[in-house]
Image 1 (cartoon, helix red, strand yellow):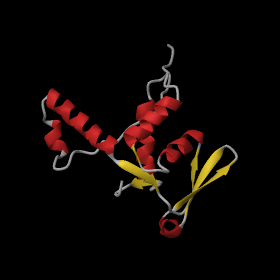
Image 2 (tube, one colour):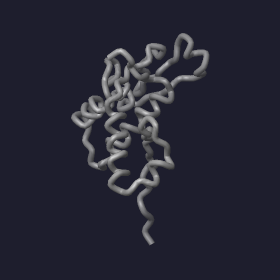
Image 3 (cartoon, helix red, strand yellow):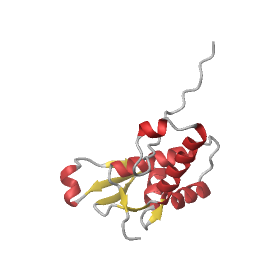
Image 4 (tube, helix red, strand yellow):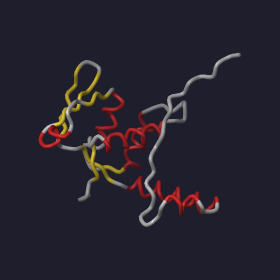
Length: 140
């Protein structure tokens, strides 16, 4: 029996709309559920992000190291290594930009033969948010 190809597991966290909880959404009929998912993605896509100025990015060989400075250096004891694609994503937010705009730039630059570009892009934006590489821009 031939084994199946292992695909890298991916996920993307989608925040609920304000005032909604999981139990409310899970019990919706299919069409209403799909409408809520679309609404969630539209809200998320419109958020504008900017790189965190408390990180300094330094190229080293074929990678880019994000080194925390200032107060962030006290809470984050390490560096983040980015490959060229990760650096491209980080670069997208050196100026205030929405996820939708940054994703559009990625789709223009990269081939998406696997059909996973959008999911991977969103996964990395979530990771960048968690690691505080980027932050929501409140004055756009």
